[in-house]
Length: 147
Image (cartoon, rainbow, N blue to C red; front, side, top):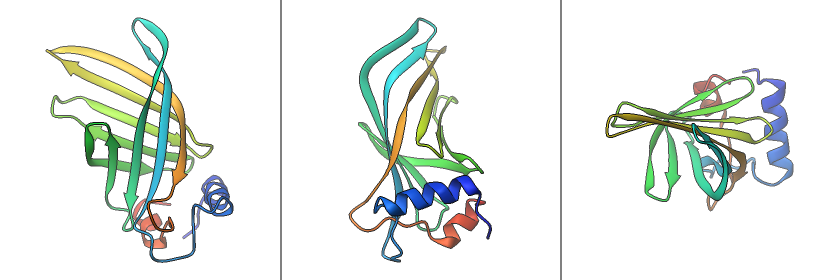
């Protein structure tokens, strides 16, 4: 399996930082994301940072998002330059979060409340984090993610 140069650089940086380890004890790869700025039809606002944690399990088949309201499953798409998480909401709308290989991120909400579209987009950064054990991206997970 050939990894893109940018993903290799991201994984190498994580390894140097002690986030990725060569142990098979890992349960997930996680990113902690913080979004201090939000744009909506009314303008751009600095606010109390929104925090989200995204995770991919060791199989690469299951992803989650954790926020103040709890944790639930989301879809994940890995490309040559980053990851995108897609959260399909019961309303029929979606929330889409993309993390690039440098850790920059955008979180787009296409909310529908009371039948009205309420779009917004938040800008921030994400960092790989440990989850109690060494964090690892197993080769089978990378293969399932198309990396």
